[in-house]
Length: 401
Image (cartoon, rainbow, N blue to C red; front, top):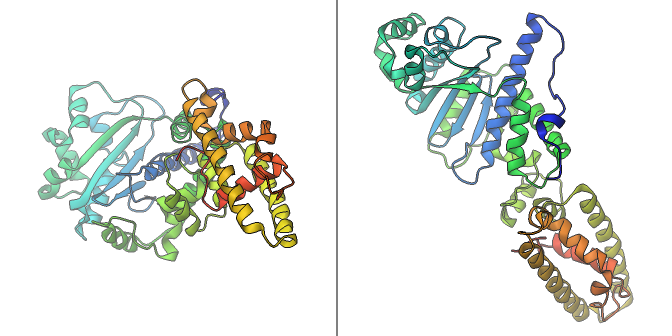
């Protein structure tokens, strides 16, 4: 992308200086919000992604799928490694999963749930720990006794262990920002690090807001029950909306993905996206801020000229139609050239909107010559602005269709 490595250039978006228990607690809380962002990004997957992420209610993070629910308890560690025995001590993770299991069992959600323990840092190399973390159902008698002592009924122990998952070596607090930005760079390869940081900040603010406050657990459980077997997220009650990180919400906070269709761009606008179709299409095609702003300005200028021509002439309809087809023909040919040049030109491949704009604006006379009827006084720059208007009307997508 022509940028420095994210690990060396990212701002420390949530760095907390100093010492003390309160500061460490905040850093861990912030780490959980960042993990929520990480998994919220998976809602953008076209197939198989979650319906939503819910923070700090039943568990630290609840990942809602149409065919199941993942209840995740997140634990950090400043030094040492995790052992099978330590995670079963009070306050070290498994006790929270037991409480969650008992809570959702009341409504039958335990049958659709996975109960996951996410651990920052390494695990012990003791065989007991390696085996238990790999497959909790193999827990020896000593570990089973500890879990029962946390309040789980013996009759539920085997079922709970069968549905328990332990994930170690989660991205550490000092490195999770870089991990997330790399994952975002894979989703939006044409975006600069500074642009991705801005998006990340917006997502982190939303995840932090979702952590805050105190919402009735009963309503959360009823909402999760509505999600069972749903192909899409049910309507979220207004007083619960801030706690639910949905696909629609992340789409409103992030640039269009390269793979998004025009219908999906329309869906963004229907959901309240403030951008025009021109902006959404150019952003989908990797347009930089400068190129996008230039396109918007030239579009506005060209529209003034077009309206003046319409007002002064009565026979403009056919001439304007002819110009439209010629301009679109040239624009689509330029998009094809960008696509074919992709193997040798990384910018053409990852930022076709920038490539197309540069090609057309560096030779404006080509567009000017298309204006045989002098609608734009054969000014190629204004004709380019007219192309931007046509894009806003869904005639051109700034890439190969």
